[in-house]
Image (cartoon, rainbow, N blue to C red; front, side, top):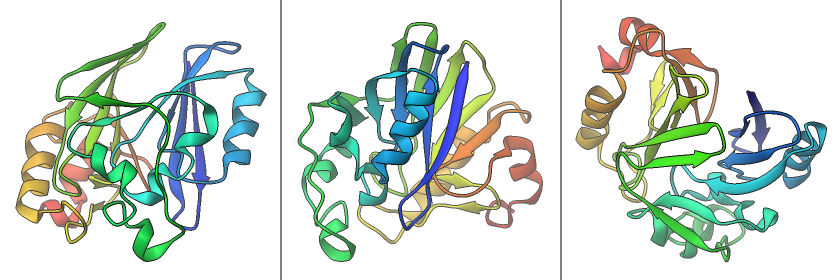
Length: 206
């Protein structure tokens, strides 16, 4: 399995490239900026983009959604953010971003498949109303992409569009902290961690 992390944009978003093998189709998670850096990794492994998945709809995670000519998957509650610069915050902080690619709606517990890869959608509202985590089921398990919900030693902001602190904490406790302690978390920003480490030492979860 190929799992590459690319740090993109001024906010240093973690964009993830996921594929079963070299010379196959790939999933791009949160291509927020720097199309050339993403393309360099795709070309290195001879990968063809199949689709994009956004863990949520803020501009720093969606800025390059249209650059690959593929559909974009997002939770149905965050779909409006992809087309409204004020909702995705680009209208306030950056050049206006409006996704033109076909948008496919996701729901809680939905299974996304691409060849040997299988991801389970976990709806984790709180940072935005449609925030999701992506739990890898195949070809490996005990990996979860947490977007801006849970970080290494941190949690997502809840003061932006669609945010709610109590809902965020509920999402983390009920959807993420119930995973096995050795589950590796790959967040939307910053370093990776494990569920066990976050249970033991994340100051926001004490």
